[in-house]
Image (cartoon, rainbow, N blue to C red; front, side):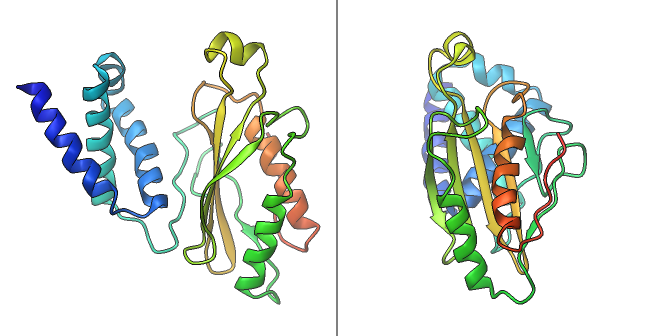
Length: 221
């Protein structure tokens, strides 16, 4: 009976989640994972059968999204408190970073074009020993909603082989364009530490933006 009830719940929540913007759905999922951990539900979710685990995640994600809907600019969420694998312009602790600001003389449309150019020029072969597995744009709503999410993949080194089942580690970079500045969040999906990977990625991008006249401070990791 419980499994059937969870299946109905998962179906209902999944249907509702499809109506949410891509940015809000992803941010709600991240917030749900943090909330589940704080509430002690993370262990239960990991040990539960896959159908029940999916239902728990869907229920938490939809609850967070419904309770705190995002603004039209789809601002990014803060990192978990004092995380060692995340940076965000929404954070207020050691994971905080400054938003990227384009020159006052530049229009928002031109700023978006420059931002997209800089992101597109990020090396698919990686840089400074990070993101050796390339990257993929998962959500591109920069033109109409000012939001983009990119998945970056690590190489298949020893850490990936022994700690991640031989699969590359995946990090998520979220970009949200506001009025005069860009909100940013770069975070690792797994692990307690990113060994400086997110900072190296953000500093590479911010250096390219500074070359375009932007105010994009580097991260001092």
